Amino acid sequence: MKKIGLDIVLGSRFVKQSIDDTLLAKVIKNSGRVIVSSIAGRIEKQNKNFVTDSISYPATKLLTENISTGHINFISADDIVIPLRIDLFGRTEKAFALQLSDKKEGKQNDLHVNFISSQNKLTQYSLFGFFDAVENDEIYLENKIVIVGFTGAQFLTGIETAYDDNISNAALQAFAVDNLLRNRFTNINFIFLSALVFIVSLAAFVLWQTFKFGKPIIIYPLYFVSFFIFSYVLFGLLDVRLAYSIMLLPLFFLFISDFVFWVYDKQLELTGLKKEEEILETLLFKKELELKRFENELKVASGKEALLCVKKIKSLKNEIDARHSKLNFEEIVLELLRSRNFSQSSFNEITEEIGVISGKVISEYFSGAVLKSYVENNFDEEKTAKWISTSNDEEVNKRVKTKLKLFIREIESNIKKENKNNFELLKEKFKSKYKNLPRKFHPYLDEIIRKLISGL
Amino acid sequence: MIKPIARNNKFFIKSVLIIAAISVLFLFGGINRTINSTIEQILSVARGELVPDTNIVIVDINKNDIDKITLPPINKNYFALLINSLQKTV
Image 1: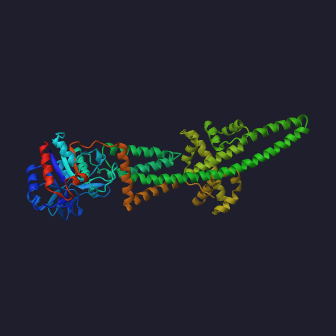
Image 2: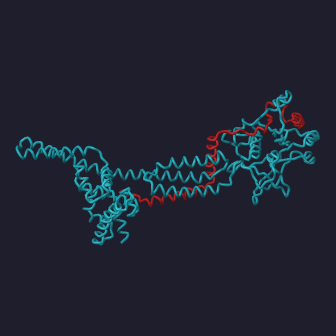
Image 3: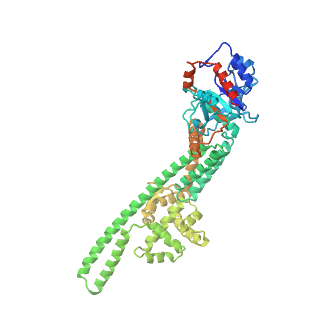
């Protein structure tokens, strides 16, 4: 037997106050290994040390016999903390668990209890079970630390752990002794450092996902899983606690903001698409009427006229088929231009390739895409060029930038020519510009005009 | 009409949100504690239970034991007897 801890308040109403504590005092003294629990009053922290105004000792008789005691207090704040030493007017009362563990004096003032398992996993005997085991030689207690305590409902601590709803004080003390013996108490020395690292990491994350990553929402699960693995390695394997909340609450706020931005952008896109669809519907309707007219003409036409009608009907049918197919035209145009490195001839080549769409339409969609990217890249020409070309080729980016500059300078010179600062008036004046731009890109042109007005 | 949000503005909004979230944690300690203890419980469950040091033994006096001895309160001499038994086991 290494130590025996009596985790029992001997003065409590559950223990009869006998006239004489002599027998108990004698046995404890003879043993030389017994630690009896004491209770400190109000505990305060002063200059990293714990102080109290009172300590209740087990019984006067036991005190006079110089019996070792240890306090069983704990502080329930962010977690369960046991002050390893409490000062009472110059006299130091060590923690019950510290006394039992026989650990040498260190710099550590407190113990953040790490509840490593359910209390049921601790080696436990009931009082009579223990006596039976002793009688039958079933128990061997060499080098063991025995904690004797009550486990009734009145002696539960109210502490909820990951594995228990409410643990007994004896179990709490047992976990504390385990932590001290195995050096596996919760290490809180890295909380501040981890908070700084998390803040820097969040800043880098926001910068990267806002400016470098096209789809910011996708990256959240990856980031969260990385954080979880990092925390798991440090806490699960090394018992190091981190400032989890400093990472998680801001991350949650960021996720919500990105979700709102995503919904907003979709709404914006949808507004444009609805208008685009309406225009396409109107055009389709017109083309179908035209087709009917040529089909009627063909019935009465002959010779050269009939041939012209057939040619026209074929072309109209192709156009109607193309209109029916739901293509994301902006993406197609950009992809085709990228494949041709945005050369001068690429617009004509694409017109020929697509066939049913005029060069003007391709040019309009390209302008729209460039203006959109210009606004999204905060009016940065270099970034816009790279965003559009998706290339690091300087020559290609130069071509895109030249085209962008051409659009912007043209708008700028028109604003200067109008000599107006009123956006609504200018918008009215730039009707033709809006007309030559697909509807979904109009909000981007608005922004550019506003920006140019503010810069004048 | 809906206006597009520039990336710089998005970055600004997000930066403000980070500062706001950290301020909330400092102002409302309860939120901070709840998040941290919840995460630690999740990490503990993910790690699984560890085996407590087998050199630590609890002799618990439960209601049945008390009922068998006597009605509460327990006489202190029972503890003397218990300590004596513990001594003998070594």
